[in-house]
Image (cartoon, rainbow, N blue to C red; front, side, top):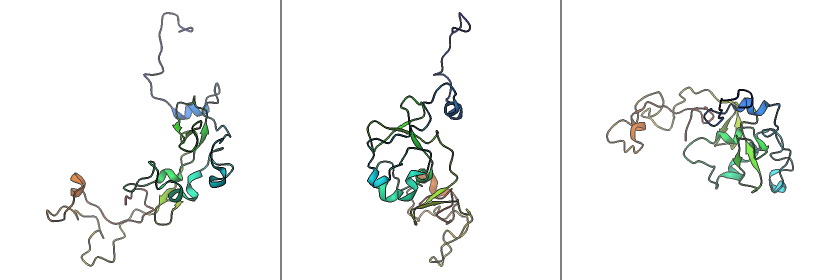
Amino acid sequence: STIWPGHYFSSFVCEWDPKAAIECKFSSACKCTQNNAGVDTLKYGSDYGTTCSAWDSSDCAGWWNSSSSWSNTSRNDWCCEEWCYVNETCPLVDESSLANNLKYSYEACGDSKEVYNAVSNTCGAPASCACIGNSSDPEGYGQACGLHDAAQDSGCTRGISCCLPWCYVDPACEKSVP
């Protein structure tokens, strides 16, 4: 160390503090670059990724449902998260799939409280996570919390998840899964 001769330091043994990296007055690495060169701006818009915004929220399924980012088995709340393109030296980056030279970061922007609704392909405030039932099942399957799949003849193939209580909830519930 130049401050304490005879002492050694390493930043690699410590976890990154995203907020400190973003607010660092000594570097602009994690600030939005205002650059989206290489992105199809006719498809995504001229400002896509240049500032913090939930850029993918307007047509997430249309743009991404055939990509490796899309999940058919879990929520796609990342569609509602704010992000922007940042300098490649920011330690909080991911590779852009739209342009080889661009890196983006969710951590460089604020945390969105919205969740993705797959039915409407929109983002919105999380709905109540109360059990809403399923009126099409006269037996009450999923209408209230219960071990609905625990019966040996249920055909459940999800391992331990078959033995957890569950109920049907609004798709916009932040804890829901398809």
